[in-house]
Amino acid sequence: MIRQHFGPLFRLSRESQDELVEYMRYWDILRRCCGKQMSGKWRNEQFPEAKQAHDYNRTEYLHSPRYHGCAMYDIDRVEDLFLQTPLYQKLVSHPQLEIVARPSQADPPLTGTYCSRYNEAVRTEGLRAMQPLQDDHNNAGLKKVKRLKKLRQQNKEFNTSTISLWRQGFA
Image (tube, rainbow, N blue to C red; front, side, top):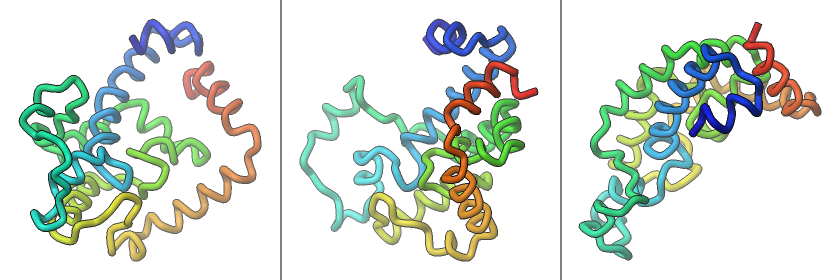
C-alpha cells in the first residue's frame, strides 16, 4: 500500500520506496507502542492496576483488527532496527526533518532505549499521555529538540522542502 500510494505521489525510485516501506514498518510499531502519544489502550494496559480503566473487554479486544499488538514486541529491538534504517539515517542528517524521525513530534530523539524506559515509567509511575520522562528534561537531546522546533517555526516551507527532498532521494 505504501508503494502504491506514496511511490507515484513523490516519484520515488524503487530503492527509495523500499527504504520508506522498511522505515514505516518499524515506525508504525513505535507510534502505537512507544512514547507520549502511544495507543491509549496500550498505555492503560501498562498502568499500575489501581490506575487502569476497565471500560472494554480485553479478551475481545485481543481479536479486534484495532488491537495494537504491543505486548508481542521487543520494543528495544524495534527501536534499534528503526534507528538503523537508511531513511532514518537520512532524516536525522537534515536538521529540519529530524523531528519526523520519532514516534511522535512530542517525543525527544530516540536513543535505542527510549521506548522501554518510557514504557517502564508508564508501568511504575502511571505516566499519562504527553507526560515526559523525568530525565527528558536532563536529556542532552532536549536542546536539540528546542533547536529543531525553532527551525521548524522559521521554515514556512517545511512541507514543500520535505517533498522536494523526497523527490531528490535525500541527495
